Length: 88
Image (cartoon, rainbow, N blue to C red; front, side):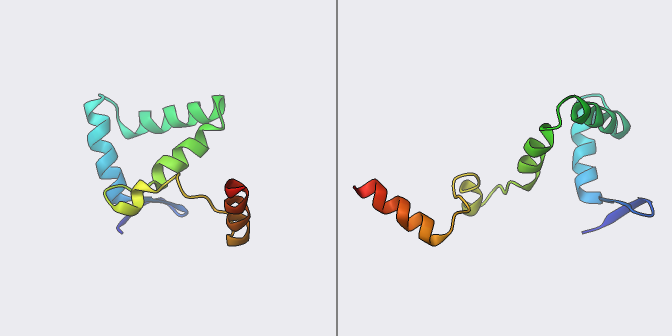
C-alpha cells in the first residue's frame, strides 16, 4: 500500500485517493470539497461515522463478503444456547 504524506501524522492511502478522485470528478467536486462535506456531516450527525466505517470495511467481490453483517460476534456457548432455545 502506497501512502501520501500530507503532514507528519497525516497519511492517506494513495490507491483510495485515486479511486475517490475519479468518483469526485464525476460529481464535479474535488478532494477539499469532499473533506469539507465529510466534516460538516460528522458535526451534524456523529453516528454517520459508524455507517462510514461499516461501508469502508465491508468486503466485496468474494464469498466471505456476502457474509458481512450476517454473522454475529457471539461466542460458541451463547450460540449453542440460542440454538437449543430455538429447538424448544
